[in-house]
Length: 247
Image (cartoon, rainbow, N blue to C red; front, side, top):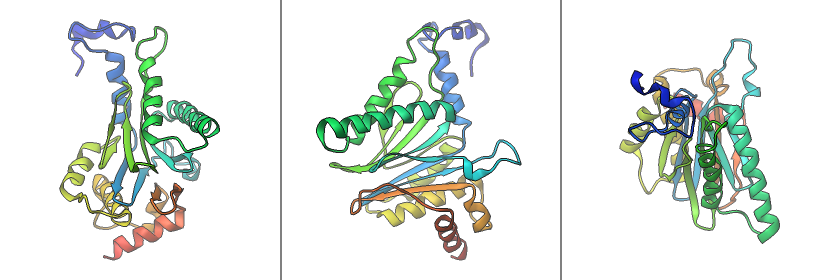
């Protein structure tokens, strides 16, 4: 992927290769591609985020690992990449969301928050002595424009999506979503599609233990009626998987 004759150009983030590439940014993108999978699906009345938790060691307590986190009451995020980098960006996003509430007495728009996060990410691609954030964030929520779903990448770019995935096996899941996504899908259908995408990537659509599998999956959802992003409990995720396994 990275030609030997060009490797000298990755010594500093501020140096472009002759082809106009920033290798440090591409390395950060590789960190995202090797991170545990996270998916998001936007329905006509809500958004669902789901993510896979992968233990770095057999003795790790999976309940202490967080894949879905709350930014504000109406916005949640899923992580793929380096969690330490994600923590720094999420803390920043939470502060910006509260500043908006104190300044304007209203929830921050999701696109404004995404732009602010990406401004921080982009700044770290052009400052000597720093490195890019090796993480992508999948942000979903409901604001005055309705359900919203965005991704941010290490370069500071962002995109709005109907359904997408980040992390390991994300290409497989995006292809699956492209075949099965419908513009008329509701939040319950989005939840089912998101879970199907996770299981498709793991090759576990046929047989699995719902209770055990629920320990490795986190799910968050929000609808246009309540406008409150909620992370589902282990029992709720297990119940969803039991219904899927019984079909």
